[in-house]
Amino acid sequence: MAHRGRRILSLLPSATEIVGGLGLEDCIVGVTHECNPDFIGGLLARGVPRVTSSAIDPHALPQGEIDGMVKASLGAGLSLYGVDEALVRAAAPDLVLTQMLCAVCAPSADDVGAACASVFPAGRGAPEILNLEPRDVAGVAETFGVVARACGAADRGAALEGEFRSRLDRVAAASAAFAEAPTVLLLEWLEPPFDGGHWVPELIATAGGIPARNAEGGLSRGMAWDDVYEADPDVVLVACCGFDLARNAADARLHGDRLSKLRAAREGRLFAVDGDRYFARPSQSLAAGAALVARCARHWEPGVADLEAALGDFLPAEGAGWERLDLARAAVRATRAKAPALTAVASTTTSRPTAGRRRTRSPSRRGGAGTRTRRRATAS
Image 1 (cartoon, rainbow, N blue to C red):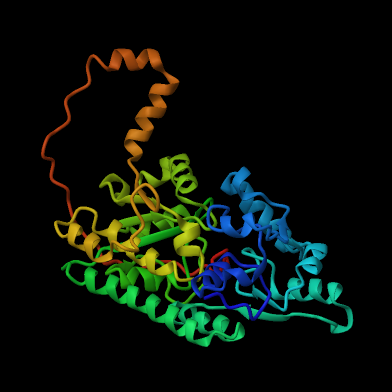
Image 2 (image 1 turned 60 degrees about the vertical axis):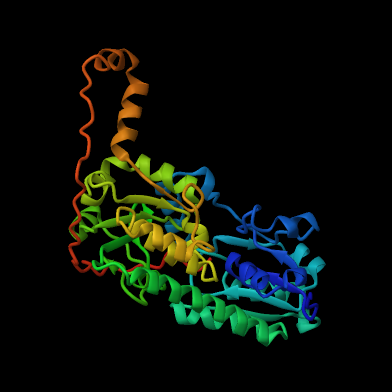
C-alpha cells in the first residue's frame, strides 16, 4: 500500500532508489538529472521533473577532459551543479534528500539549502533538508532507516535494511566455499586512474577477495599507472563512477594499451562492470555489486555455477551488469579495421589456436601501495 506522508524531492540517484525500495515512489515530486531514464521511467511518465543540471556532460566527453573540467571548477570554488528554483517551487516538496559526501557527485547540502532559502524566503513553507552521508556499508544500511523514519515509515526501513544485510551475508557465504582469496582492484576512473574508496573495499572482502589497493573506509585515491602495475592484482574491475557497462567497456578498450600491461589482463581477468548502478550509489544495489565482484573473481573456478545459483535472484547478468574484456582481440580487430589489406595477407598464415591451454591461478595477496588522497564521485 502506498504511503503518502511526504512530498519528496530526491537529489541523489541513490536516494531515489532507496525511496523506491521503501515502496514510497509515489511520494517523489522531483529528481536529479543523474537518475537513469530506464530506472525512473514510471516517475518520468507521470511528469516528475528533473530539477538539477550540470554544465559538464560526462556522457559526451572523454575521461581526461571531464577530470580537467572538474578540477578547474572545484579549484575556482564553483559548484558543478545547478538547481532549478522554479521547478523546486512548483514541486512544493516538504522533504529534500541531498548529500555532502562528494562535491563531484551531486549538488551539496549547502547548494540545496541556498536554493530552498531563495524559493522559500523567511522559511515559509521551507522543506526539511535531510543530508545523507554514508561512508561504509554499515552507514549505507543505516541510511535506509534514516530515510524511512523521515517519511514516517520506520518499519519499511528495517525491512529494507534486513534484506540488504541478508544479501551481503549470502555473498559472503557463497564466496567462503572457495579456498583462495584473489586480490581485486576496482578502478573507478582511468584518466587518471583512481581506486574506489568508502564501501568498495568492504564489497571486495564480502565477495571473498583481498583489496589490492582500495583502502577500507577511506576516500578514493588518485595514482599513477605505475602504482596500478605495482599493485599487480589478480582481478581488475573497470567500474568508472557514473558510467554504465557499455561506457566502461568502451573506455577500457580506449585505455587498452595501459590496461593490457596488467597481469590480470594478460590472464583474462579484466572485467568492465556497471559502475554507476552497482558501486557508485550508496543504496541497496551495493549488495548486487558484491555479488558481481564474487562472480567475476571466480570466473574460472569449478564452483562458479554453484555461486551463481546461490546469488541468482540479485546477481547482475552477464552483458547487463558485467563483461569480461579481451583486450588482445580488441587490438586485433582495431588493427584489421585500420589495415584491411594486411588482414587478407595475415589470414593465410594465421596459426591455429592452442587447444586446452591451462589457465594459471596465482593470487598474489599483495597489499595496496601509495597514499595520495582525493575525493571523487562515489556518493551518487
